[in-house]
Length: 432
Image (cartoon, rainbow, N blue to C red):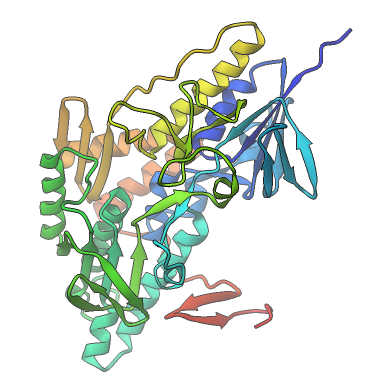
């Protein structure tokens, strides 16, 4: 009699979900189903390059089906999971319930506007390709509006950009906008003087890149200031509007605001009746399973794995990858009768790029900044890309951009509708 295969569902095809699926796909004892709202896996650490017109979306994304085209035991479903029954290990999508032996929750995080959800239209975040192309559109449109604006005060507001949040994404965006204006685009505009472009980085904490050693945080701040970025620390953003925002006690006139501050787990996780921390992340056991059901695992940005300092592991790609690999191996081993082990994270370090030839790298006792850190940053990110074709294209793009200050994707692409300066504007056939 043929033994029935165990069924595993993976919700989310980010770093964690894909890493788990790659391990599970090797087992002939399993049938795996990956459910995601999008048909592609996205290399999020390079998403800001799409937003800054340095790369095209296809160069940092790969179809999920392509990754598993040779694995007959992997089924891909383009769908949105609407509910999860934790007790019965089942999920609801495509208008019916589906029961599994194991569930892996890897739905990732979304931006958190601290209860001011209306700010999302004014200051988009950067978590997916749609948001990246929207940020690119807003930045390039601001330059175009500045070019034809005769009023110097209004022109200045178009040439003023504010990035809210001093983590790696905020630092990378602020540095890239400054470089784009003062190097890449400086000769493209005749009436607008792009050398007068102002970029503000607003951080509510005492320093930017708070997860890094203080020495590197201060170096990153120094680099940004040398690039013309105004770094405002211990400053909260408030009163966001189409004309600017209040940063502490200062009112900044700006037509382009970008959000890189708070994040929280996905809406699906918010609805689950399970043990969570103050940030809404699922509190997981030592084997990454949730307390409510040992056959359901949570990994990546939605999981709070207990650590000695009580803060949990950071929401970065290496954590999600290692957790996905661990859960995949745990399930495979459990089928052969092995006892569950405890997850242990190997901290390989963190890094952030500030601009051309500028980056910071922290790995154990190794702390680097400047050109060497930037080379390491480039090498690691290219290495992590999931297709050889993508690696080649991204590497060539970077080499070209480095020596020419060129940008290859400076296209303003409108959706059928869009929000600009707080107004919904229709393009195409969509009903108003």
